[in-house]
Length: 456
Ligand SMILES: Cc1ncc(COP(=O)(O)O)c(C=O)c1O
Ligand SMILES: [Zn+2]
Image (cartoon, rainbow, N blue to C red):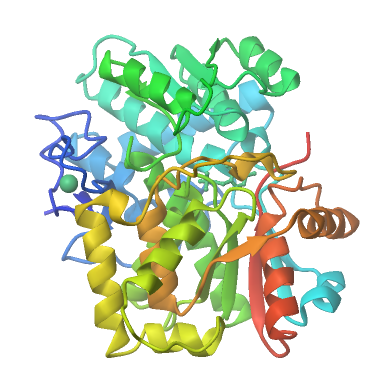
């Protein structure tokens, strides 16, 4: 019995013993049935205890909560083998990027209270490896590959592949370089030249993917999936392509739990959503902590997208439309609270279950992608969207669409507070500012935003 396993959100399939299937990245039933299969990290029935380690390396601090740790034990490497693999990869990353993965700081930004009314906490990922939170996802996948190799299950060095135009590719290139694995990156023609040149410096191959006129869905993702079908390891930040990427993303949630235990109950968390792995990992980790019993109540989860590309908001609206004749109050906490209580909860869950069985029922690529200053969250499709919707409904949260001027304002406010986030990294704060504008200042509440990416 694993204490942390990989289980499919849509069909319940559980990853086979790793010695039999050392590449447990996707659900084996994820054929073409149209269901929303995501082979995601999940607690087993024997719950782990919440760790009390003071280690500053998140994969050591939170080891008992991580699938990768479970994998090391299952592969016969033991606690020492796990620790050694984490330290080896971390030291190699430090040589490549000048820093290893560490618990990131969180602080109250008093200047933001004027904008939001809330006691506003900012968790600062901008000085994380390669300048964003993305390394958390890819450290986990890189570590898993190192464990499998240490156990003698992957003799040759496999090629890795990722589709991304920015932070995810940079993080992938750092971790791949550290692990001495070859990486193919699939990027759009308008990828920033500085990013492309850094990718090349790190030894990654860069493939530019043109978008055909009127094409629906991201051509980079299509090319990446072709590479994976040809044998590459999916080395990106999208749960449906590799559920292990969500495992390391959960370390961010575990740090948020530690923050809440010190600072007090967080009423809300606003989190920027592109492909959705960040918010999905966060929601999963918070729910794990609730199940283990270290937090009583989940913060209201507010996923944030730009008005320009908002497939998750469209999916949320489809759930509401699917509730039938229910007369709902206007958007806000009263409505969200009604939706998470009986009898509406069952109807919401029925809609989400339909979406799990047939993804296109709720989630579809955005038909008209438009540019935004928050260019890191312009994913055509919210790949990890269903888990985010589930968590938003269950926690009494709701998605927020933000306008361009608010993104600029949020980035400037963070920069003034000494945090060098760009507009993508500040989009969560833009969501909080928007929510406070639309629903009144959040007086006497504690809210958290994540500053996820450094300005380049
Ligand atoms: C700085 C930053 N924040 C947030 C996100 C959103 O993460 P996700 O795509 O997992 O939703 C990204 C994604 O590229 C990003 O670069
Ligand atoms: Zn499945």
